[in-house]
Image 1 (cartoon, rainbow, N blue to C red):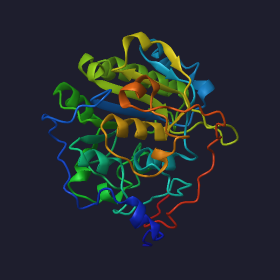
Image 2 (cartoon, rainbow, N blue to C red):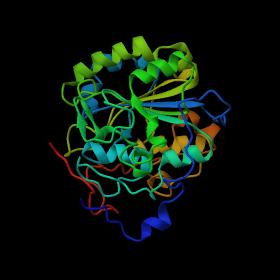
Image 3 (cartoon, helix red, strand yellow):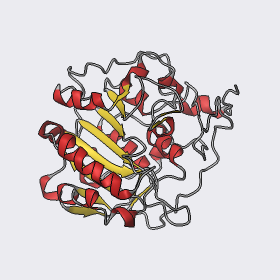
Image 4 (cartoon, rainbow, N blue to C red):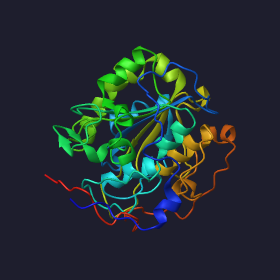
Length: 330
């Protein structure tokens, strides 16, 4: 087993929160939590590997346009899948350029540290995960590479924090019990997210998921929901992905389009400013890559910039990870 090697800058850049910090038990969220400036809860639902143009004509997705704000200038970070999920939680892809089994060392800070430091709660809901906090590479239609929390050792190897990595059934239970955490990430399985199937299959799943779960009025009234994709289907053109904001958005903006340039770092930046979390000091602070969602910018006290030189975002930047602790690709 080869331990992940890091250069010495990591210690300086990284540790907003340490692995051994006191974690919040988010199995019980019914207590006072800091109110957000624009929303009190946020949920991200990620799909897989589809071009914007494909989803723009796939009914399961387009049927929701009247309910939300279409983000038609949203970019993924790179290819393939895993570094995008890592970036969404860590503000960087740390040089990851494949879908292998990575362990990001426990002294590397993430969104989970920022949330907990402010008394906020979180959960990662994973379809088909075989057990709470499971750290394996693959189990049926569940894969580790689509789980943004477990890859960070400060979560995956922490007995308390890893309890926040749960199965999808817990999501419906939390909605029914009005027991939602502040920050949520939902990963459909490899069939439902379109990875091993098709855009049409994923769209049909989303239509059912929205009808049976996301349309819950209690959820919609208090939660900002982002429907997005990890990456597009091609590494030869701009890495644009179809994305939609639903839920607790202004009623007059439903059915509209926002052409501001966003990336997966924008989700981090929006969350950080919504609760005054501070930041990770990485790409979440890069003004060219981390515009906040425009509908909330005024409330967040943030001024977005007009990005005209849009990157293709197809190549992983060399980063701090120079090895892996374990690699299981079958």
